[in-house]
Image (tube, rainbow, N blue to C red):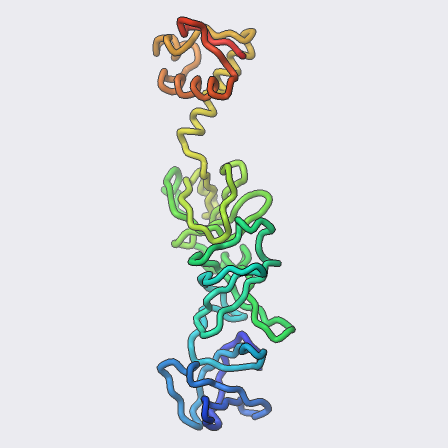
Length: 285
């Protein structure tokens, strides 16, 4: 009999604190405390589906409470405490289970917070303990749904389930799997956080790429590149400025005056360009 599994056991007798359970071989007796019965009070000779776990003294114990995860099954579990050696999660029984710091980011700011939910499963540790293990990408493939092409360009809520050097893996409530490349955000987001992101690609396999960079900011960046390219190819000068007409700007750069002014504001703020006094000529600084 192993911790982390739900197995069928026989109620062989009752004690002053609960029931003693055993399998058909009667090789080991396991305590089912009254507090672990929930609303299901068994009788001697009943057969019960019991979940096995280690109590605070590392003894094998049983509960009739339904666990959210097992050593076989992944599920969403909530963070209920954060300590210096990891985070504890509620798996649906009386005892909370640890996700070790060894399975968490080195940066403590990227650890999940109380109330965050993680998709995980249980591992039976050799030191008589159950531990939480984070689900892998292949585990998510078991619940994956293909995202519709209509999702392109929309903002959606996603949950961060993995952090890596290349970016963040995320999942939606609909079980669409996504990825946010590190070039598509300015600041890394903590594990377990729920964030809003914009869909920038729906791949043929039904997975999505997303961005945390505001669309307006992307446009500004593109327009600043257009302006800088012109300046660099024309000896650092451009016959345009904030006072130029929309037609002049459109004819020379192919962008609107509003977009031009936003990009110019960004360039001047970063001390890359200056305008002459009448704001009709721009030069590299």
